[in-house]
Image (tube, rainbow, N blue to C red; front, side, top):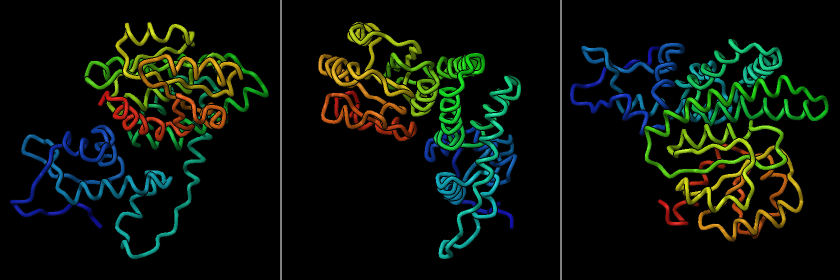
Length: 306
């Protein structure tokens, strides 16, 4: 069944940039869904520009609903046209498992060309929150658990260097294109590498924030100067570790109380140390990175930045 509709002449049509704004799906992903999977079929102007009707936007929203339930994009087409009244069985999520295994093999093989292709494909086919939740964050968790038992500095540092370069390029251009609040993003002292903070930087940039990324831990006593000189609206700290007891229970709350902008914590440390920091001036944003970044906006509104 074709999903290309013939719309009456007076049907409102939207350019791709407006559809991207309305749905939160970037234009690269919308084009990939159309070209690779035929999930949407917008009309075209005589010059080839895409135009989307309201039913195309509704279809995109349904695609997002399936992706948010953990359905791989390759399985979505078979589900879209099923009646809403029918209880649709949750599809086999084995494709996600396969993709995670493939990504881990590529990382551990130090196959950088394949890793670059996988990275760009995942960000083109999926909204970033889905790519982080279903692919990159689970693989990082698996690798960090493996490295804790069997350290592999070469693989870790090579993977970190790859992500640092890719995220750095993205941040450079995104920071130039937005006037959103500046988030100072810093790794915590005990984290052996910047993997969590790099993923958090990707998510924050995608949500329209300017990001100043520091992937080596800045001492807490230097935060006031950093906030003032960089004109930061918030400090966001991240770690995949528990972090030191003194740092968590005393130094960090003291620093948050003295700072004139909010301090938030995300990553595994937010799950591991939630009880220790509850009731302090530190805002615990959780270990689910897309959700953690989504919690920034109400926090910034409350602090008067937005």
